[in-house]
Image (cartoon, rainbow, N blue to C red; front, side, top):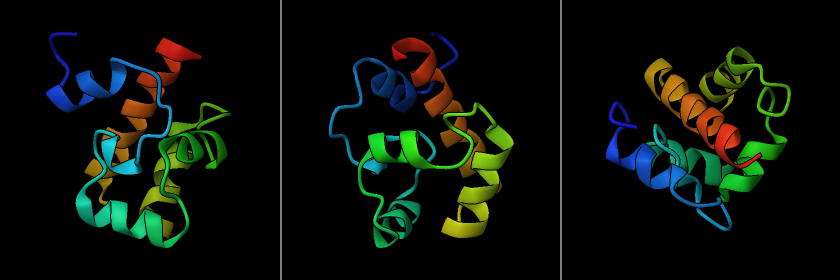
Length: 91
């Protein structure tokens, strides 16, 4: 876990529960606003209902974040990695 950012480490330290999407490493304040505007305000909803996550297709999830939510490529990669790491720890 030494290579992880403090934000990623904090996110992985416990189950998602009712965490807002802004807790996901890689989700900026602006991207969180875009997600909330689309009705996605909780991390569990983002993890379990968006393209790619349940099928473990990171590229599909990243494309969705970029095209539909206005994420940068860096944000998409970082948040995809964060959610993938969380799934590996808790699912």
